[in-house]
Image (tube, rainbow, N blue to C red):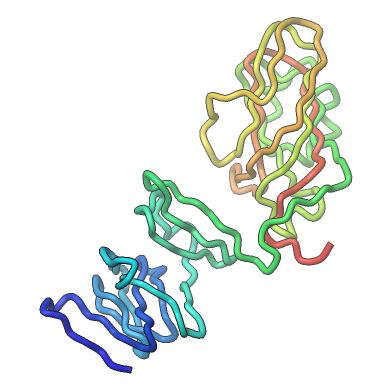
Length: 263
């Protein structure tokens, strides 16, 4: 193993059977086994890396001389970082990993993307259909409702209102960490034309529709794939918004799991 110093004191490079290693982002730095770098510099295999709260950024490089390349290295480890310490926006190309093993990637425009890294990765699982909401008999579904029920009157979700539901009680959503749910949503007893939107409880309501109807006294349904989020500290939640009053029935029929284990 040999190391080289370039004409710039800030540019260091190490050659180890054709392998160069680089540091990643802040407290979630990309770490070789072991490696070292001062904040802002490439890491060196064989030493300890601790950039503290500073960032170590990889820039430049080419196909023939990459800033970071992996070859004859036994492992490359990303130190887990709690979600609250990962910035809401990550520069494109940045990497971090959460304590549960989800890889966080800085995508286009700073948007974060998640890659689940469990042994089985993501898996779509059909579950025994379970009803989690029927506004016509609301009291039977309070275990699945995590927001105020005052938005429902006379068996209908009122116009312009939102209700938040959780699939926490749908096996195996909690134990095996569901990220998305497949829900069959039905509207019945419509009053006028309207739009229903299903969306993650962790985001602002998007200007999209999951189910549309065009007049009174209709019964319509649609199968929707909805990302799960959290509401008031409750996990595995999604929201239902209607633009016009209607009865709403929601049945869960499938889950996307990030840690499915055995079935």
